[in-house]
Length: 358
Ligand code: KG4
Ligand code: ZN
Image: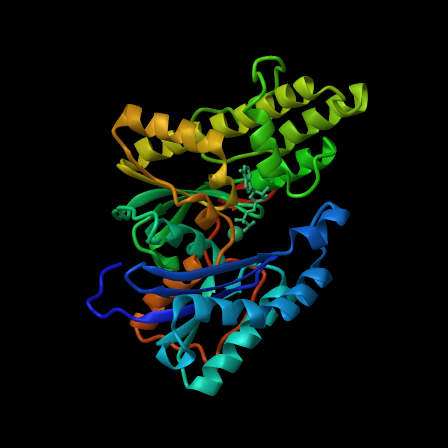
């Protein structure tokens, strides 16, 4: 993120079920990073209830921002700008963050920019937490984005919509969505990802023979719904595994297939695009199995792998602040034009359920 001028930015994230605020310098330095998760509010419903999300964001957004400013030791009048997630996400949830950010920017006469959440996830690899200094990735790089709503491979030449090209994406479920659906099928609660990750470590992945999703060697598209259907069929036939060992084995088999697919397609993309740097972002990048398998694959090929610390993989506002700081440094101000949208600004090549666009 090259620029001589360093600015201090407040980031606000309310696109889904985390209310988050952070103060970050455009150099990547994280001064504070506050995340209030709504997981407990949605858990009884087995997924996110949009109305509940908006209500909780409204309740939490002010205390979360106050905590971020206080922990950073940066009062409002020392901020250089505000960055807020403007897309993609739940419309009502996005509006809460956008309105709050607009109000602050108006009151303090600060520039404000709307940030694409997916570009935010890719920027997480550049964050510098004081307790985890990291060498940032060099452009161009391959990005594997694996979140609850999106799963795609991108060639990243520049950290802006114009500099990011989708190489392939999922035709159906996102990787995180598959984890959450399988978690629900197995009675593990919401979100399923972290629990399945933990149980998978105790299990034997070879006990169940699950299909390889989208195994065509040269395709960079993903499909996880078949894998989920297989687990659903197992549960229909045998019921939920009552014995812990069996449950761990099933989780291990599912996780092994997901991880293997993500790593295999990333390697094909690295080779095809002749890239030497690989970045992974999004909630599923917190997965221990994926982190280990990706590191092994990167080492075997002399590729540099950069994966943010787990806290920066799942939704946070530090990545939004950093992504926005680049636009603010370029002089952008969306004060009168800020709009929210459920859709990403990144051009898509894979259509859900349809495969590659012509
Ligand atoms: O990026 P994120 O926080 O929110 C979205 O933008 O979607 O990703 C949330 C997703 C959820 O589906 C969750 O189950 C998954 O990330 N996740 C994990 C792990 N931690 C979170 N999946 C697998 N293993 C994990 N350790
Ligand atoms: Zn996300």
